[in-house]
Image 1: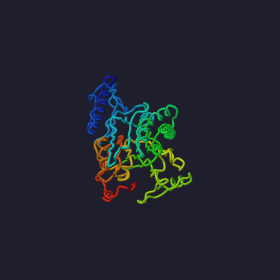
Image 2 (image 1 turned 180 degrees about the vertical axis):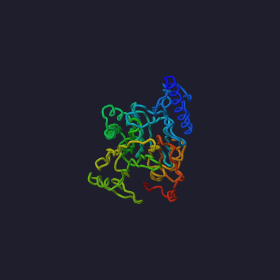
Image 3 (image 1 turned 90 degrees about the horizontal axis):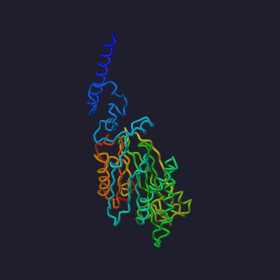
Image 4 (image 1 turned 180 degrees about the horizontal axis):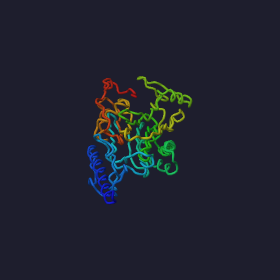
Length: 370
């Protein structure tokens, strides 16, 4: 075969391959950005730049379900971890906080960027006044940012940050002439997301974090209450005691319904600590739909799978946060109701055909649901 004939055959084969690829992409509802036949030098086999245009591929190109996340792929982390990782945009994060039947909303929530690689998400539920929750809302991210600059281990960063915020709050309240503020405290549930794939969560108290994976709720936190045998024993060993009220609810020294918190300095000698429990998890964006952070106004009335199911029915994370907060109040919650929803790659992929409901919750919102 002559060189000219070989060249013609080569161009024909290359054109045929690109045509087949374009038809396949069209079948997947992804419009190619190149003509069907172009110079072979412009074709790229990279899954991050499949058409050789130099434009970043969006996560949308990797899925075929409705409501999927449409964010660009982050190249350095994707290359580092060997899997496509979509950018998690703060603009898409949903948050809602409702007063409920309380006189004051003591819940706080926050989402921001700590560094180029680390995102920060947090909910705080104050008690005994909003002072502790306000302090955490204002200062927690600053302590974390300072520690991230010096420490690689995000679990260690969060543990140190919680304890340092607690110490700083103690100094702040000591400068106040109001002695009653010594009983102010707050839960804290904080999540850090590094490179869009490494998720680390820390918590004290009974605000929660859950991950929706393949439509199932994966609990990332466990409530710190005297109902836990290990926590009850720790309180007793620290010199405190647990007393049950008329509703059968246990409280530390007859006052506090949680065994760990930021603040509550009048109960530090009874074992109430600000040291968090932490958990690290690697995200799989093909299966993980969202992270949800919720306060006990929601958790006491809705179980984790129900929260996951309700959010999965929503088209947008902002709508989801609002709906889950309203749903808890409709079910009978009397507390402040706060939720944050952070979408991941499988957002919209797993929708439950129905949402289970427990009728008895309308009559009693004091139970602690799993």
